[in-house]
Amino acid sequence: MAACSVEELLAKAEQEEAEKLKSISVEKELDLEFDVGNLLACDKNRIESRDFRERGKEDFLRSLARDNTQLLINEIWKLPTERNEEVLVAKLPEQTTRLPREKPPPKPRPPTRWEQFAKLKGIQKKKKTNLVWDETAKEWRRRWGYKRANDDTKEWLIEVPGSSDPNEDQFAKRNKAKKERVAKNEFNRLKNIARAMKIKTPGVGLLPKAQQSKDELLKAVSVAKTSTASVGRFQDSLPKEKPPKNSGKKRKFDPLIGDFSSEKQKQLELLQVMGNKTPKLDLTKAVNTQMREEDREEAAARRRKGRKMPGKGGKGKGGKAGGGKGGKGKGGKAGGGKRRGKPGKQ
Amino acid sequence: MRPLTEEETKTMFEKLSKYIGENIKLLVDRPDGTYCFRLHQDRVFYMSEKILKLATNFSRDKLISVGTCFGKFTKTKKFRLHITALDFLAPYAKGFGVAAKSTQECRRVDPMSIVVFHQADVGEFIRSEETLT
Figure (cartoon, each protein chain N blue to C red):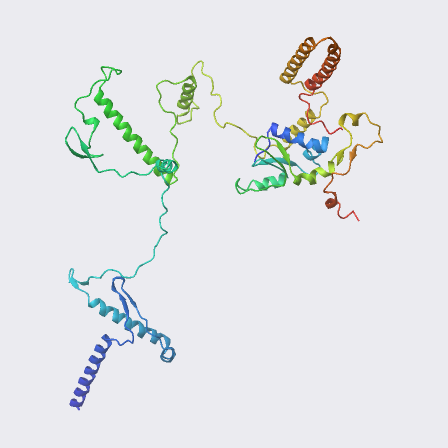
């Protein structure tokens, strides 16, 4: 009895071992495609729908997943391993599957002010040499940057030009000019960036100038006055200081939904003024018309004198008639200068 | 959208008075509600105050039209009247056609003479389509 049970036990043990080994190796029609870098295994084998239905869906899926995972693990075991703090670690290779972009591609940046100008004028970029021959140092130096060729701030002797102040420090002047150029370049670079990213920048405001006109000084005074924490409310003004003329909007319109009745009143008054029979007198128009008439009469008189006797009578009549019409026209014109929109009384 | 300035109102009223004369005050001052003129992108719109208040909810670039468009101001600030104003002008219009006599003559003529030829009314056929046989 014991022998039988031992034999049975051994047989069972062997069977279990075989099963275990079997479970490590998996048979597949088509080999799987592996991307071990991404821990990806693609199984392109056909799925028999009969199997799917026969064995029960959950079991079928579980066994399929187990088989494929086993194959993937086998692949991982093939990789070179290293021991890291008592843990066995496999080094994954490079990923072979190309993943798509997560975010949209960046837009090309808008051209800078110089680039716009160059495009407009058709200026091409000229490739320049990296090094330039420096005559004083007798060697090739870079075109710009550290230890550049022909650097005028590094000169040890500067002649004072005839037009400048003899006490002025020429070296300091050159250094200052260089600093200003650098600052200007930086400022323009930042402006280009702000324009590209469409960031609103605050205005420059009033710049300091050597000679300021009266308006600019007044403006500066008013700006300084309002640049306090209370926006100038508690600032005393000077004895003869006048309030600023036009601060704020350049043109002011009525509010959109103002007082309807007052709007109506104003319009009705306007209509009444327009409909009046007594027209208003436009002074400039009256004066101009009067001057024109006088010129015309003088011209007519001169023509009359220039003509001979027979023509004189006719011209006189013509002149008088012209004068009469001119007179009536003058009165009508001066009177009707402002008369418009005659209420359709034809 | 904004109300018209004094000058703009004047130019517009002058133009309107050529068609409807004194009856503009009937447009300005209506018994059945407060109507107003508003300017939006150089066009003059005539609308009731109710519509105006609703229109304030739209941004300027999205607002296309409010009420009825009476006309527009050109670049040189002249007022051009549009056909869409006809519905409001028609009831108050002063005669419709070609003048038969000059203005001066019309003043001195007897009551029975012809002053206007009813021949320039191109839209009458469409307007009175139902009444004509």
